[in-house]
Image (cartoon, rainbow, N blue to C red; front, side, top):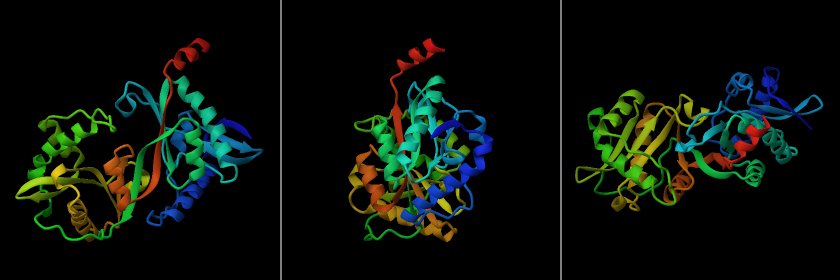
Length: 319
């Protein structure tokens, strides 16, 4: 096996490998839509951060990423992200191929100062997941999907479910503050800094999310934030809607209310022609992860490795 820099000469063959791996996951998650082609890989060929693996003239795999970015996951570290479709390997000897490709690519990444590495792996690709685990990666993010069909649950009395109008969006703000506070607690430990009412409304006016809410005694007690796009290119399909925010007051949990809230959103979205509902969440949110995986099927694992930043001194000495 030889490892070379990924270039435009490799794009067409790499796209076929990426599509083949996607079809593997589709066989495990039939809700995933068929795609005629994967997203264009030309960007990844041009940024110089990727590698490809070959046996003679046959491509065994490739591994690319976006350009390094600052403040990965809100930290002070520079990060690298290799998204779904930006890497692939043939099934035979897949673990060995990924090991060799990451070894070569990671050296490039660290030389840029990037010490936080995130790779999106297909959730049912046990071989790839285990290989990245061996190389120090751990699960952080999950993307999941379900058909736009009602969840099987009992009706929940005493609650009203509806889509909020823009004039009601400020009702979400106090719950959003509570969500931020929860995210800073153990074992979450995400320093989600709360915004002001003005910045919240500025976000709503700019991003145009939709909010579905549950009211109890005329007070908002839970919400869903719905957007047209999510964290993967699948979430950007025109018939897919995505849950990108959610919170329920603690005293209203465990009553089946949230399933009914999702069903209210599903009913309206299905009438509008949407056929799939996606969600992304952190795996280290124990109650949230358990809830979402009960009603949605995971198809992507976002695995992360944080390298000791002291290694940067060594690389700088060797430059």
